[in-house]
Amino acid sequence: MEFMELIKKRYSVRSYKNIPVEEWKIKKILEAVQMSPSAANRQPYKIIIIHTEGRQEELKKIYSAEWFVQAPIVICICGIKNLAWKRNDGKNHVDIDCAIAMDHLVLAATDLGLGTCWICAFDPCQARKILKIPDDVEPIAFTPLGYPADSPREKKRKLIEELVCYEFWQ
Image 1 (cartoon, rainbow, N blue to C red):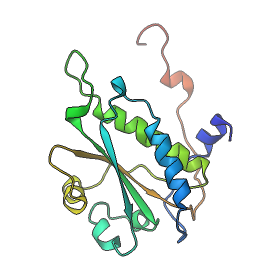
Image 2: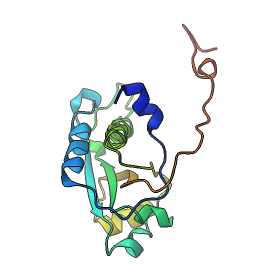
Image 3: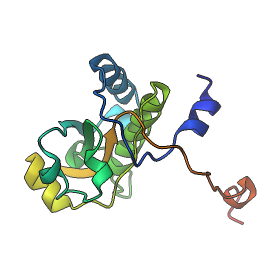
């Protein structure tokens, strides 16, 4: 698929079919994550693949929407702050690196005909408890992964002119 077509095809899926995701597709998606850029190539994250079957009620404590556990898989990306690159002023880039990795995951999934939905409004305490995430690691984002059972809504985006400045802040 041509890149701009892929970007336009991606949407936040909120309904999933009860169809397993092929293992080879999961591996391709994880390869896309592995190839994503990170500051100083530190890759300060770990991906948790969670099969939802039999764990729906437990997982809904992390994020309560029914469609979150409709997909056969939920993925969590966790940031490891002490492994991340820090700018001279101390800014830690773990969140940025995790966001880039998650974006590669989402686009790879879309390219393979799968649906995803970024979730950042989850309960981090429940995520830590249920997924046994250590204290020095932070759950950053989740996404269900599966075959869409819905259709994309109209995408409303700002005009490019509203998003871009040239040469200095305007």
